[in-house]
Length: 319
Image 1 (cartoon, rainbow, N blue to C red):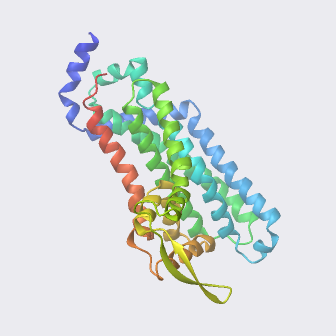
Image 2: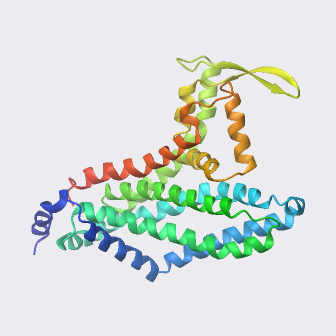
Image 3: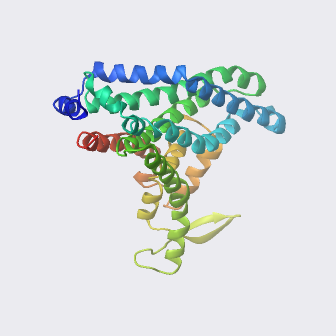
């Protein structure tokens, strides 16, 4: 059977989604990860990350341990690390999800089976998300025993909250990665796209606040600052902040949303303090787009929109 015949044969069902077919693709994708030790390697990595961080907190933070505040410190430290590490892992996991199949030509064989293009894309997304989510869960679960023993205080709710938000965060980046992978013909281009995403969110987006502030200082276009009064060392002082729309753009970053969603499910003092400081800039009440619930919507946005675009585009590309 020629490649053209296979492709024409799959064009009819390409607009449909078969849950059983999606599940079959996802199951095979996950099983391949387990056989390649990718799943177990990630589980060991997350376990080591938590144990190492807990050991550092227990060793260098005896005073904190005595106060029973070590869970707060652990969640604060780990969330800063996972904010960087999870996107890297998710982007690598999604790198070859579709592009690798297209480059090798195996995508045509896969589509010659009763799988539509949408089935394959969604199955790959679910399979890669399962690898990341379950490895996180296993790593956290195994480390929980060590964490509880080493720390002076162990808050299960904060610990589970960190795990849950990290999974949602990881799925968002996996969606971005699989979507980009489906839009490229080669793993080289897909790899460049993954690198571009990382640079966008961790270099460009993190620099927006500084860039907006510089433009505001020079009164360029609509970058006008807004004055507000706050208390500093017992005295009221007047300072300036960026316009609200600038904070809206800055906080569309998945990493920023990750930190804010943590305030919904944890009681970590450092995270709560940042929210309180932000509220002072807006007269004591945050705009809706800086509130914790909206941050959750941002993570949902980065999960749904990329895969929705990919479903539309992948159905129409020439394999």
